[in-house]
Length: 180
Image 1: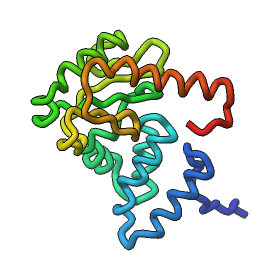
Image 2 (image 1 turned 45 degrees about the horizontal axis):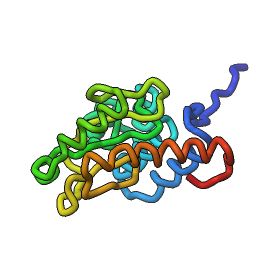
Image 3 (image 1 turned 180 degrees about the horizontal axis):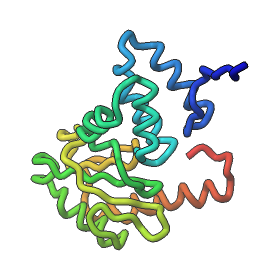
Image 4 (image 1 turned 60 degrees about the vertical axis):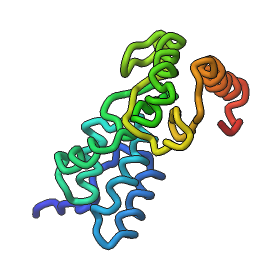
């Protein structure tokens, strides 16, 4: 007598909550592939970046190849394939932001954080990158820190922005239940 083969899904690398969210997402759309971008964003939020394992599992869940996932993901600057800091600072240097001082803002972040292009601070708290556009042209220059926008920036505002995010970490350390 041969043992019965289980048809259960492979173990997920994601939390049970996120795996359940993915299952609901693929059922929501008539074409599973339509769930790709939300799945990648949620996966990145949980894992920190789109590792090979993340890409492979997302591909498996929607029935496409890992290469197809990467082809879509590389188009979006908010999707990352390498680890970043807890607070990922994206400085827009597209034309509107550039004309209003984005490079000066970017250089001030580099000086304050002590990192080079696409760098991560030694404590892993901050990463810095230059991006093409974050859709805030009317309020240039603008940056995005994770999902927070900061606009109409000047270089002298940079230390305060960094300080506010450092304070969030300190506040969380003192009260882990505090909403960040």
